[in-house]
Length: 198
Image (cartoon, rainbow, N blue to C red; front, side, top):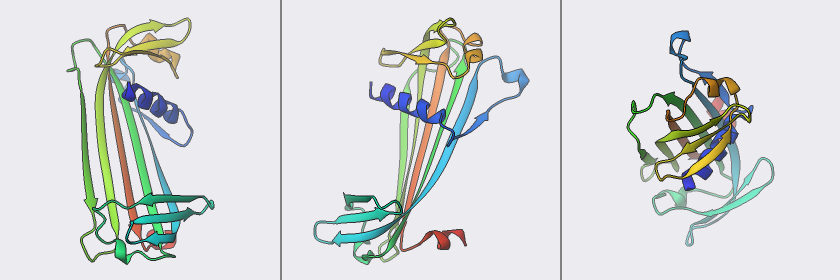
C-alpha cells in the first residue's frame, strides 16, 4: 500500500512540466506503451545554526525557509561545518514505465541503494542513490472513462486515469507493467552555486 501511494505521487510528478519526458522505442516497438521522465533540481542553503553536541543543524534556503535536522552519525566531518557555510543539494529523479505481454516478465519488487560519504578530514559531502523496480498487473481497462486498474504484488488494486488514451488501446487486461524509479541526492558543504558552475 505504501508503494501505491508513492506511485500515485510519482505519476503526478511525471505529468508536471518540470519533468523531461522521453518516449522510448521506434515505431516497430510501439505495440505496447512505454515512456520515461526525469527531473533534476539544485538547491542552495546557508548554515545559520549548528550544535556540535546534539548534531542539530539549521539551514536557510534562498527562499528564506528554515529547515532543522539532526546530522547522522555517518557524517564524520560535522566539526568542519561552520555557521555561514553554504550547502548545495542536487536531487535527481527518474521514472520509467513499460507494458509487457502476460507471463513475459517475472513478478516481484526489488529495492537497491548505495550511500557515499566524504572521508574524515575532507569537506563534508555525501550522496545517496536508490533504485526501485516493481511489477503490476493490468486488472481492468475502461476506455469510456479513460481509466485503468493495476494490481500490485501484494494484491492491492488501484485505479488510475490515463494521461494518453492511446496507451489504453495498446494495452490489455493481464498485461504486466514494469515500473522503475531512480532517485539520487548529493550534498556538499562549503561550496556555492558559482563554484559549481565553474
